[in-house]
Image 1 (cartoon, rainbow, N blue to C red):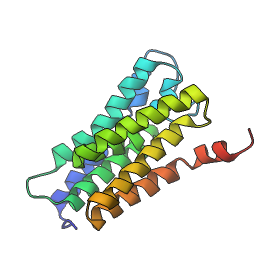
Image 2 (cartoon, rainbow, N blue to C red; image 1 turned 90 degrees about the horizontal axis):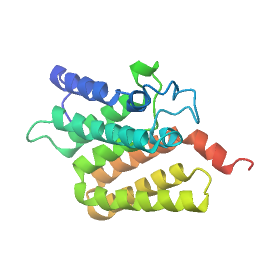
Image 3 (spheres, one colour; image 1 turned 90 degrees about the vertical axis):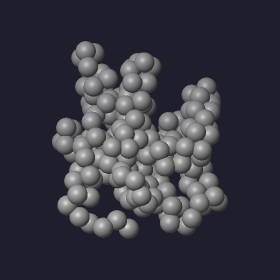
Image 4 (tube, rainbow, N blue to C red; image 1 turned 120 degrees about the vertical axis):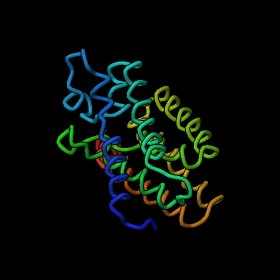
Length: 196
């Protein structure tokens, strides 16, 4: 694990600050719609998609990019995967608990995908394709909570690949991230398994 030094804490703060940028809110500028009060109320890709495809793409790229950018900016040569995972976690926490949104935020899927593609690009890219297939299939077939199913299904596949191909510590970090974003989707599970 990384040494807890003032420099390390400052790097974590930078990652948190980058993660806290609310791209869903920025993407909806000029529409007159408060994304925090519209649709599901979640400032993320799936909620923005209810209003506009291109604004949703802006949101997705921004939220995805800040996960990658945070680690790239904070990391230095020679740092091991546990340190990089920790930088990524700080960015995800910034996204989910943004001071710009009164410490509310999105559910962390896109930002954590940015973290994953930075750490494991060979695994992440096929998983993103799997997500896209599930997302399109869910929309075509009218699945309830199609976004949640696609997001968490792809995330579960990614963690399974980590257990198969990587060391146990990396896999457990992935499992921790999966548990966190699953917990962030608890309201979606209530809708999914609630009354039709």
